[in-house]
Structures are given as structure tokens and as C-alpha cells.
Length: 169
Image (cartoon, rainbow, N blue to C red; front, top):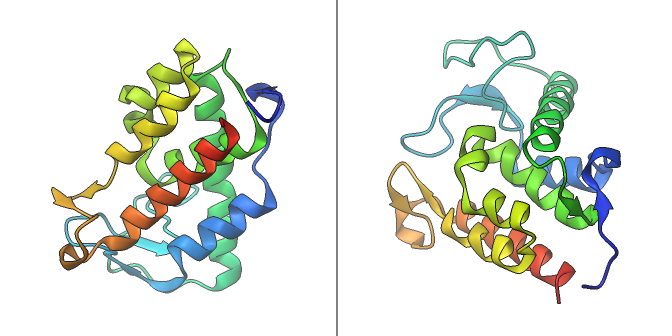
């Protein structure tokens, strides 16, 4: 492995991660359903407001500043969940950001049930990276197929996989 693993408990979301999420999610001032079968999102992919209320399509538009606040709040919550989920796992900063981004997009429940998590706990870092590629579906559609209109999901997962593998070569 290229980089010495760092204890998860001392890591925090990087500016690069926040910027990456903003680029991947884009910005929508009005609530939308980003891909058929998904739940409504607003801002940079926010599905639940900081007060715990789910986003609804009838909600009022938000500013970029509010979207940034919601993003930072959500990432902060996701970080705590990720750290609790893999307390003894040691990760490089790049790996940490990959898995934090995954949990931001798919949720902690999906991560906790995943082979990604079980491989990390076992110390199988390369297999954990490979497990990322299983998550290319949304609403039952294979997003690696461009005509399924969710190709961005596949690209994002593939980018996570590439970053993860580069840390474990």
C-alpha cells in the first residue's frame, strides 16, 4: 500500500470531497427527482433537511448558500455514522473520502449491509474497493448502460473505485 493507513477517528471531510460532491450532485434550487425512482433532492443532493424533515417536491427553492450549509451538515452527520460503522479500520485520507462520499450518496444503511464494509473490517482493502463496483444500480436500472438515463451514477462509482484502487496498489 502506498500510504500509511490513518485511524478513521482522526479524519475529517476534506475540502476536495465537499467540492467533489458539489460537482457530482450539481446544484438545483428547486426540489427535483434526480433519476426516475429516486426520492426528491434539493441543493447538492440533500434528501433530508438538517431538522430531519424529508425534502418534498413542493418545498420552496433554496439559495446556493443554503445548499452549501445543508451539504456540510449532512456530511458532518454521515462522518459520525461512518466512523461508528468501522471504528477499528484504518484508512488513508483518499480512502476515507471515497467511503464518505459513498455513504453520502447511498446512506449508512446500505454501507452497513455492504460487502464494502465487511471487507474493510476484515482488512481486505482491495476487495472493498472492488465491492464499490456493485453499486451501479438505481431504481432497478443498471446505470452502466447509458440508455438507462443514470450513467452519472456509474461514472461516480467508477471514479470512487479508481481512487480507492490507486491507494491500494
